[in-house]
Image 1: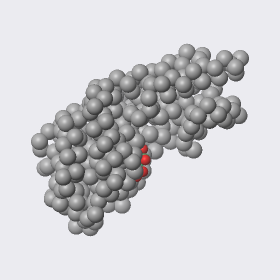
Image 2: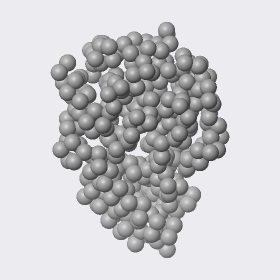
Image 3: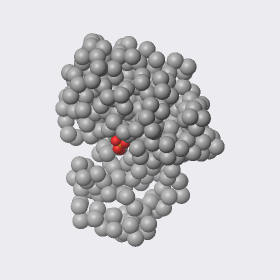
Image 4: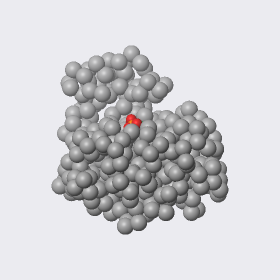
Length: 318
Ligand code: PLP
């Protein structure tokens, strides 16, 4: 119990969480919250807006359809490389909430703005960029994140919910996913994934000791710029498909050539692995290469990748 409260306090300090928001820890990770969001909120009007900017928000929308009507705010696509201007969005003023994914882990598309949803509660999946920079929590109704990218290990989700959005869960909402029941029980309604919560607490304390979210943001910018600059300066040898203003600072997908020379990419990955640069293969939906530069990845590690990319370019360009 003490540990749980202590970790809630670190979350509050780091994100400057306003007093009218509750911080809860739930088993089930990000996918659990894909269901929890509609189960806790869609009863307001029976319908919800989803801004689909990549594979994860698409999955969230699909899950929500089980519990109510889902309005897709953007025209459907399977090529996620930008975020259309908000003036073109098809928002429903009657929606229970508007859902976004602030960083698409697979496609490398990251919001560079907080949408104005005209009073409709904004719900954000921040699984892969939470605690990588400051965010104005008061602009959101709900923020949630599976812990395993930037703040810990798998199995637990951090949920920050505005008080007035509690007490509206659908009657079919399992107790396990009911934010109100979990808040009332101080996140220990049942036996919680305590080890995952403990690790999350240790990681959050580490972030505080490093200088907090401004320091994480400055590191993220340095690390991501290093890789994007090499891509930009390679005259098309490396190719990043995502529009510059929404390029993720956490996940950098790129190809060698366009549409992508698979043989050369295979060679790139093999050479990288020999140097201890692992987990660089792009997600199967996207192909190519993906460098993830989460909080735990050091500048030195990213520099090692940058050096390798430069060497590989010299050997293979032309
Ligand atoms: N949302 C995003 C943005 C993700 O990257 C992931 C992936 O791990 C999820 C949701 C799903 O989270 P989990 O694996 O904890 O269910």
